[in-house]
Image (cartoon, rainbow, N blue to C red; front, side, top):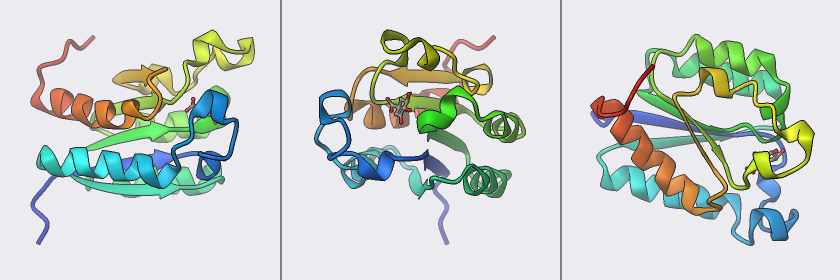
Length: 153
Ligand code: DQA
């Protein structure tokens, strides 16, 4: 039986193209590389990672619902859904544990339409602009949040 707390990593649309897609912005590593880095960080911290990637908002919402009462935390890179997917906002709002919003790039430094995140108001913390290192850092952030050492408001 798996006694280790589960962390759900969610990847939104187009992230399966990482490595090929705009590498000057998102880097040359593939999604599998980022998931492996997150899984390895999680294992080292006594957590088990699950990963779901989907281009479908409905599938991401369903994965968030299925995490309720089962997963200890969620790390989510919603891709472009970040900027307009209120159903993902609402689903995350119904999740009880810590939520880390993660971006490879720093959307605040990019086009103005990326400056709004509808996920940010329900995220406990945000990591952005650190490229692939963000995946490991997001898992470390989860442990800080689960230990209750973080500032909360
Ligand atoms: C992204 C930033 C989003 O604006 C964009 O639509 C993505 C990736 C990132 O990881 O930097 O698909 O979430």
